[in-house]
Every structure is written in C-alpha cells, then in structure tokens.
Amino acid sequence: MKHGLREMVSNHVHENRPIYLFTIVLFLIGIIFGAVIVNSLSLTQKHDLYMYLNQFFGQVSEGHFAQSAAMFSQSFAHYAKYVGLMWILGLSIIGLPVILVLLFLKGVVVGFTVGFLVNQMGMTGFFLSFVSVLPQNFILVPAFIVVGTASISFCLKMIRNQFIKGVNQPFFPQFLSYSFLILCVGATLAIASGIEAYVSPALMKFVIELKI
Image 1 (cartoon, helix red, strand yellow):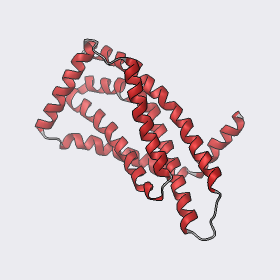
Image 2 (image 1 turned 90 degrees about the vertical axis):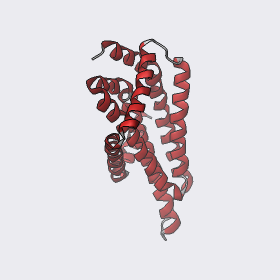
Image 3 (image 1 turned 180 degrees about the vertical axis):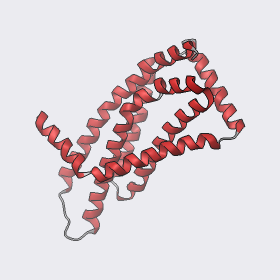
Image 4 (image 1 turned 120 degrees about the vertical axis):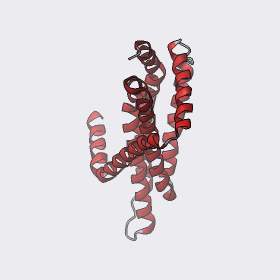
C-alpha cells in the first residue's frame, strides 16, 4: 500500500509538472505583489494598521490570547473552506480562473503580512513574521499549491472531455482520485491549524518580550 501510494504521488507530480510550475510562479508573483502593496499604502493607512498591530501585540505580551482550542477550530474551519472551495471549483469548467485568483490572493496575503511587519517594525517585525506567519505556512503553502494544481488539472481534463473530439476518459475513477488527494492534503490542515493555535502565540509572546 505504501509503495502504491508513493507511485500514485510520483505519477501525479510527473503528470502535472507544468501546472505545478505555473502555480508556484503565480503564488510567488502574489507574494511580490503583496509586498509591493505595502509601499503603496498612504501614511494614514500605515499608521492605522500599525496602531492596530501594537494593540494586538500588547494583548499578546500580556497573555490575552483567545483559547487555543477555539483558535484551532476557527483556523481549521477557515482553511478547510478554502480547500473545499477549490475542490468544488475544480469540478466546474468555469472554476479554473477562480482557482488561479484564490492562489494569487493567498500569495498576496502572505507577502503583504510579512512585508508590512518588516516595513514597520524592522528586525522585530522580521522575527514576528518568522514565528507568526511562516510556521503554519510551511505546511499551508504546499497544501494550497497541491490542491490548486489538482483542481486545475481536473478542470482541464473535464474541458478536454467536453470539447475535444476523441477524448473520453472515464469520469468516476478520476473524480475518486482527485477527491482522495484533496482529503489527504486536507488532513495536513489540522497540523497547520495546531501550529497556529498552540505554537505561534507562545513564540510571538517570546519575541515581543525580547524586544529585539
């Protein structure tokens, strides 16, 4: 079974290598775009965001966190909805551009968050982004790229079956394979949510108290 699973993953990556390359580049462009947006904010907007962050970090330093269990549930529900939406869009021919937009926006959010923290708080912002944004995103980013690639690939297969004569691949086995992959990736969301709920707050408090 282990050998079969490894072979399935290898075949999936080999078959969809161009799509993986495209989604990774799209995500990186989103990160760059998000970082550029930081520099385009007005001084008033930067000040308002900075004041909000200061208030939030002040609460963190005092240990005023939301309950970890509640944070875990909210994070997991949010990420599961994101992945579920991409899965549904993958079942629709018209969902292809929306999947691309979702991947791009995820990159924008990461780029903007890290860029703003570093822009406003220097080294402290860098270390805060390192402990609050990056840990869970080491899992989330590959997960979203895999889900996005699988959704795009399934979308393209449906388009080929629908519009190209002579192409008529069986739908149900592909659907099961696609859905199984999404479920496997979805399981990793629990790990990312656990890091965000139980690990990141403690690391953030540690960095803030250091006052780098």
